[in-house]
Every structure is written in structure tokens, then in C-alpha cells.
Image (cartoon, rainbow, N blue to C red; front, side):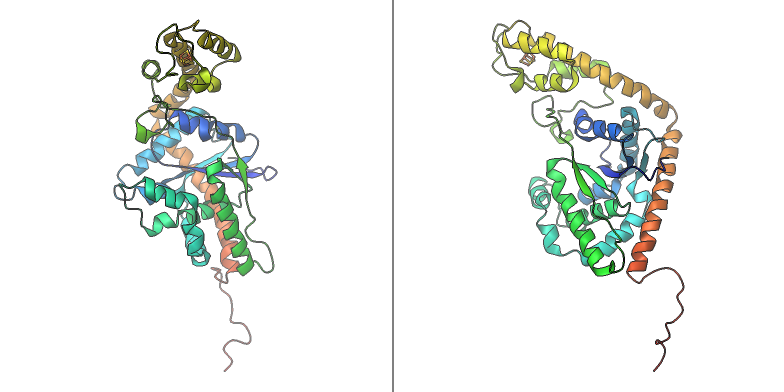
Length: 348
Ligand code: SF4
């Protein structure tokens, strides 16, 4: 495990939604892999967060968490260079969440943009629960319990980090009179490349348009074949535009500059057909996914190895979380230590 205290500490989590797709890779995981050498990284699988929207059936939560871990390891996260764990295996998060829930005004939570948005978008589930409203408070606990310096986020998540900062500030105002207890983290904006699914919409499991990190090569190639293209290319002789084509977006992320140049020229002049162009995109994807499959195999063959990584990760995370909770409890006058009565106490 990484024990450096020199590097800034990064905190980030991913919901335990099961196997990951290319959108998860490009949107977060790829960046996490890069960061593990630059920062002291704590990455957690947010199984409690998954419950905030999927609480009715919890039968798959544990397996989903393991599947996420396997994809993390496949993508190149390395237990020797970062700490990986399952959120619920470090229950100190829940204690801090509880304490934060005492000081967080309801209005702060109701105005979080994703709260209203998701309640409207996920109409098939009843999200009028305490847990769903309070999930940004849990998120604040996830970050502040490790005194994270940086939280990598996309634009849409900046409001959550801001709320975490507000909660830290409020906590420090109440209880940090003599020393700063919870430093405010900074958002580390990570530009997310546009990664469309096979139907051209945002890649998402709920749209059924994903390319999974676990997809074998023939499946990847087949999915690419059915991918939508620039609608202007009705006939082979019609010129197209890679900038408005989902396959073009894939090329921009995964293909070499040489291939990209051939796509640009060939598509715009109708010099290449979409079938050929898609096969080049498939080649580029396979080059990224095949090494992942090789790395994953070691853990698929011996699942205990993956679980050992989680156990070691939660032990390391617990050490840090325990130290913070001792400070938090002390600052709130609730330490676990015996304290003799003060002289003035007990005098009638
Ligand atoms: S040639 Fe490639 S980039 Fe152009 S429309 Fe066809 S698939 Fe898209």
C-alpha cells in the first residue's frame, strides 16, 4: 500500500453497478490509472451509494462490487500503487455521515442539481427516501474522513464537491475552534471525452448501447458493425463527416493520429466505406481491451486474490478513517477515552 505523505491525496468512488463499460473507462477509470503514480489515491466501490437508488433488491450488490474491482484491476489500477476498498467495509463512513447529517441544513440538499433531476428521470423508482436526499452528505463523509485534497470530477459533479466543502466549513465553525479538523478538498476537473454508445446516444447500460470492458473481441467487432454513423452517408459515394459520427468519436479517443488522418480524409471524400472505417475503430478498441482481458484473467482464475486486495485496502483505509474519527469525536466532546470529572462538576 502507498504510505507516502508527500503527495496530495485523491479520493474517488464508483458505484457498485457491476461490470463497467467503455464510457466508465474513458470518463473516469483511465484517469484514475494515470493518477495513481502522481497522487496518493484512495478509490472506493460505493455500495452504499448504489443502495440510494437500488435499495429494494440487494441480492447483486456484493457481486457487482467484485465485478467493478475486476474491471479496475483489468484497466491497470494496481494495489501496490493505490488503495482500493468497498465503502461498506469501512463503516466509519457511516458514523461521519450520521454526524454530518446533524449539521447539514435540508435546503442545501434539496438544491443539489442532481437531486431534482434524478428524481424526475428515474420515475420508475420511489426516490422520496431519506437515503437518496442525504447521499451528498454520505459523499462528504467519504471524502472528508480521509482528508482528501483533491476529488476528480466532471463538470456535473462540481456542485457535490462544493457541498462537501460547505459541510467541512460548517463542521469546523462549530467544533474546530482551536484547530482545523477537516480541511476543504478541491475539485480536480477532469475533461471527459465524448463517448457515444452504439446507437449514438451517451453510452449507458440503461440504453443497452454499451461496449463492455469484458466484451471479447468478436463481440466488440460485431457491436461496431451495428454502430450508427453519420446519417449523411446513405450511399458509399456520399461524403461524410467524422465530427458528427459516433464512430468518428471513437476514433478520436482510441485511434492513432495516422488512422485519424485516414478517417478524416477518407470519410470526407467518400474514399473509404463505413464498414472499413468501423473495422479500424474495432482494431483500436481491441488493442485497449485485450490487455485488460489478460490482466483480468489472473483474478478470474483466482477470485480470492481480488478479495484479498479489498481486505488489505479496507484495512489501510480504516487506519486513516479511525484517526480522523478520533479527532472528530474529540472535537465534538464525544471521545471514547475516559475523562475524569472536571473540578467544577459534581459541586452542588
Ligand atoms: S466513414 Fe467512418 S467516420 Fe465517416 S461516417 Fe462512416 S463510420 Fe463515420
